[in-house]
Length: 319
Image 1 (cartoon, one colour):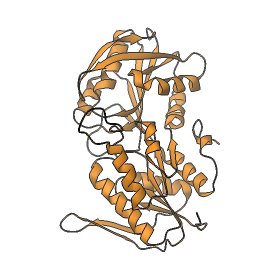
Image 2 (tube, helix red, strand yellow):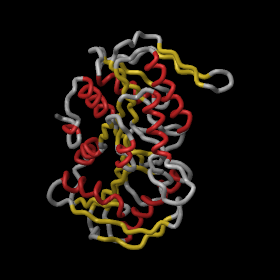
Image 3 (cartoon, helix red, strand yellow):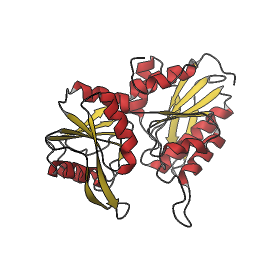
């Protein structure tokens, strides 16, 4: 694929604050783009800068309102394609519809595949995202998908707290791989434990028991997202009931829908670390602390533009 040395950043309206931070990290201004609405609510887009032949990165997480942000991203991609952009990368710090990645019962869609199809056909030449809920979604694409991890960002924040005698806890069996990678990165002394639970419905869970030892330890519960907050709040409660000295949550995406804020305020977690992949509007949990992923995405964008490896960013931002 041929494109010029011109690196261009185009921001949608989903998370303008994160787009601005990435722009500052790269020391490259955001393109002059009008992304507005017609009186009837339809999306109106115009790029006012010359992007012909440029290496374009469209910054737009698929966070709530998901459908609005999804269509906006598709129209931005189409706009760039028709303006003769050299290469177009859809940068989605949060990948929406990732939880519907398979047909787990009759007469349901595979929504993640629909997202993949529409992005590819609207003009995306590659996708850059972080901590997909289901990593196998990468296989839905016939274009390159670069999958980053929030682990180096959250680990830097965790190490800065100098936590003694830590134990990494997965709130469910599905998160064991992520939890193990955190425990390994923290080094010797960081053990692994698992909260074994049974899910009753999409919003209700029934916790069974703890696998591993947390008594007298400082617990760090890691997960890829907090949606309604039920699962991780129950995990924090079980850890405390099993003798944990303190409980901290470290999560990639703070979706925080439904009763999430009330549940997190009521749960016994002492600190809640989340990244800023999703903008915070209105109320937030009292113990919430944001850690920015702007340096991570800035380095990934720079490496992609210069045809360098991204795997160096999987464990550390210093490379």
